[in-house]
Length: 66
Ligand code: SF4
Ligand code: SF4
Image (cartoon, rainbow, N blue to C red; front, side, top):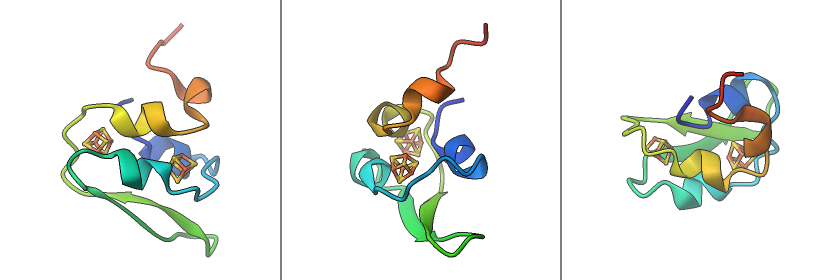
């Protein structure tokens, strides 16, 4: 997992907006999701992983598949 889509898909996103700020390519936009509050929508992800590092929930979704 290299971007925050999985965090939003699992309803862990709190809409804080950090990932939008930290994507070095500007490819994240917060828009209202299924539940009516802002979640990240991602275009042309470059798999850099910066958004995951910026997310307060990143520890829950590390790259380690243990
Ligand atoms: S380009 Fe990097 S920061 Fe932007 S969405 Fe993809 S993994 Fe996240
Ligand atoms: S950094 Fe995490 S909690 Fe904050 S908007 Fe992005 S996915 Fe949601």
